[in-house]
Figure 1 (cartoon, rainbow, N blue to C red):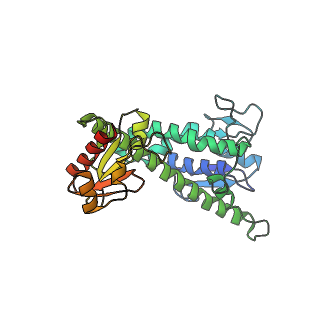
Figure 2 (tube, one colour):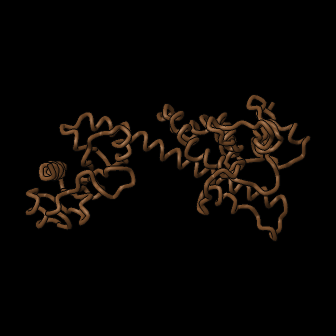
Figure 3 (tube, rainbow, N blue to C red):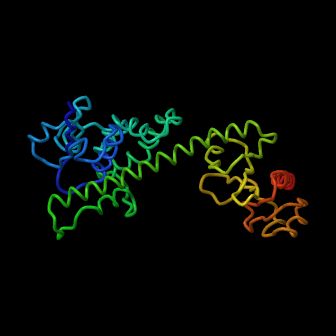
Length: 309
């Protein structure tokens, strides 16, 4: 005998990012497919339908995670530790966010789920909470909340509730796609952090980070306060890059730029100026250069440090 389909309920009418994002999280965390196949999704304000539902969010004037009720509009609704009010997205994330992240990650990265869920909560879900509750300092017209809002049918559009329900599902697909990509970006960054730390531990010179492949590395250097001045790694064209480390996140400066005498030079001219036979180029702004071999890149970094000290 087949199991009865889960009955999911959120409010009808104009939808917002918090309930749309929450639906995507629920689908992932509970392993659900399309609405109408293994679960029912009803957008309503009918008290009887709300009471009969298995999971309710952003409607119903009740928060009780054990009872699977996740509204935030009632008096006494929960807030974050600093007093920021939760939206439905935040409440759903507290209960189901970890499972949603686990559902996205490959099995070998499951150990990163808690850290990724916590970072998404602070960087993404909290922002949704702030926007939905009117506590955000500003609203970006290209932000997720604005883009989700644009899916709402216009005031003069045809189709009624059915069109609005279809638009809700389209918006949910967008939100879920954004969540999937954010999880993957964070997984990649955290995996890169581990590789950067291991590579740095192997480095003969702690100021030169030698990587076996290109990856995000500057964040790990900042996070772990590594004394890196240059990172070396292979490029897709076969060259080896010599990448200068900035002094702080977002800066276009360098802790130590490549030598001024090398700026803007290429091939034979750079080889003569640098004394590195297979040097390929140095950018005019001196934040990056390249050689044809790993040994050449290592020598460029070594000479740059010697000249800059």
